[in-house]
Image (tube, rainbow, N blue to C red):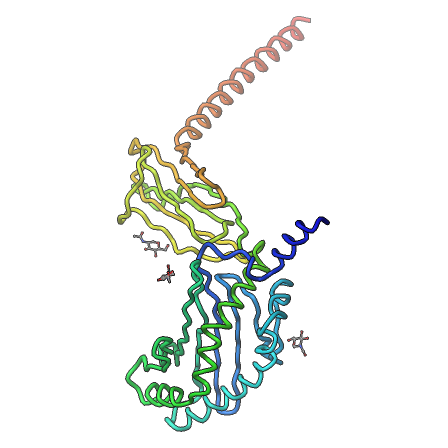
Length: 339
Ligand SMILES: *[C@@H]1O[C@H](CO)[C@@H](O)[C@H](O)[C@H]1NC(C)=O
Ligand SMILES: *[C@@H]1O[C@H](CO)[C@@H](O)[C@H](O)[C@H]1NC(C)=O
Ligand SMILES: *[C@@H]1O[C@H](CO)[C@@H](O)[C@H](O)[C@H]1NC(C)=O
């Protein structure tokens, strides 16, 4: 290797030379704790965007990595050190929750949810967040700018926890470090190790079919599935013009498939035989500048006619055949008779 090439090669290995994401990256930890008087069932998952990075085994709190690169990225820098202490954090957290529950006489069982993480923008700025909910309702949130906790509901529990946690300065300093230093740098490391999987693109498959709930209504369904990433555009065209949102148009939410791709369906209600042409148009980053255009073929009358014609032909042929057979037989019989 020539010195110049070696230099370039070394530069590529430096973290500073890593690729910066072109889209905002959201790294978040989702925690759900179900607390009973004697126990706490904790589940934790860390996601980068919609990709699961790691989760905790609820039984023994061991870390499960979803990808080999997630485990490699976590072995770098501060992540390993922080991960090695998480059981200690978790035990303290559970103890704190039980103590607080007893102080405000919260009825067991109850559920505490936490969403914590950061958004890393392409311009390298980042934004940290922590939201805590109890029983499915927002309870407290951490204000990064003011570095204190704020109640999100007027309740003794929200007042007590936000006040109590804000007064613990060591926790606040550690939290600010986690959210504003560790989280963005871990996000960047994960992004660079896992780029091939994080930026993968799967093209959508689209099919169009019709449902007839009643004689006066025709529902055209455009089913789009198997695409990744999530962002997609699906519209109906009537005579080449986009059908605007309205009561006739019903597009589902984007739902996940089991293989980390997504699906949705768009249903357009039309009047049968209205003389218009319809097509479903799909645009997705995996298709580049192309789009999928799936016309709805109004074949419902055509097959009926062709079936009727076929049946008629069959009847005519059979009838003709029958006459012929009868005639031939008659002929044979008459021949037989004459003999
Ligand atoms: C934790 O439990 C899971 C099964 O629930 C098991 O596969 C794993 O090996 C256990 N890990 C440790 C460190 O015991
Ligand atoms: C960085 O980008 C974010 C999101 O686009 C924006 O809100 C923020 O002001 C930008 N910061 C700087 C310093 O440019
Ligand atoms: C849209 O679809 C949903 C689910 O299939 C259904 O519950 C709802 O009534 C539909 N809305 C309209 C306006 O057709």
